[in-house]
Image (cartoon, rainbow, N blue to C red; front, side):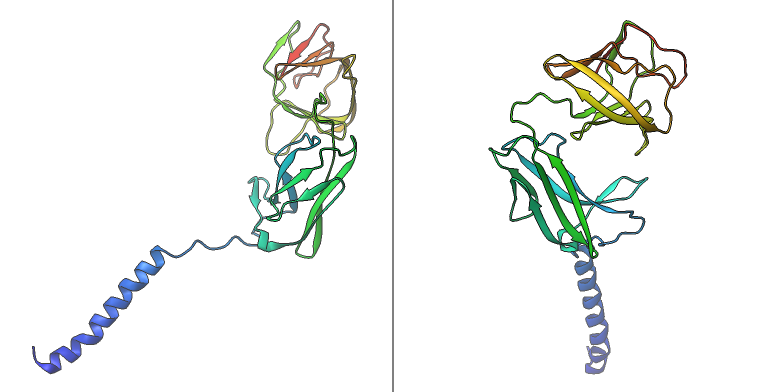
Length: 239
């Protein structure tokens, strides 16, 4: 090859090599970091992996943002600051869990929070005894005995003695909600409606609740139906 021709081809070869290098760099480039305020987000919150906070338990926690109606998204730790815990619990060094003290007083309040975009974000919960029987959780009806009524898609009992009933769960929608009182010794339960998007007529919310083998049984209550109708007696809901 003549020297002049070689000189002309050299820049072409260099450019081709650079292009191949850029392709390889793009192929192995790390994914873009999640935004601290992603498009469509509504608010930040502290998420925990349970609704029952027992003495001595270690509870995973995470920073999240609400993206309704698209669910939630993780909030990177780099987007948060000022993590803190008050009450009988300690925060892990990596900010991914809290450990409740084994001798935490029953009923004690624990608060965990952080700052996001200059705003304080906090979650609070109450400690329950290590072996205490509680209704807390999100229950879905398995069967119904003794009467004919619409199936309950979600029955939520929260640790702050609040409840919510939803016939057909969709995103954050709930039909009606309020407060509840339950005596674990006698089994008696009473629900008091405080509001709702749809409160069925003929509700009977005074009865009994018991837990056995991971199932919740409600007897003597009528939680209503979307189709209406009066109260029905003899209902036994199994969740």
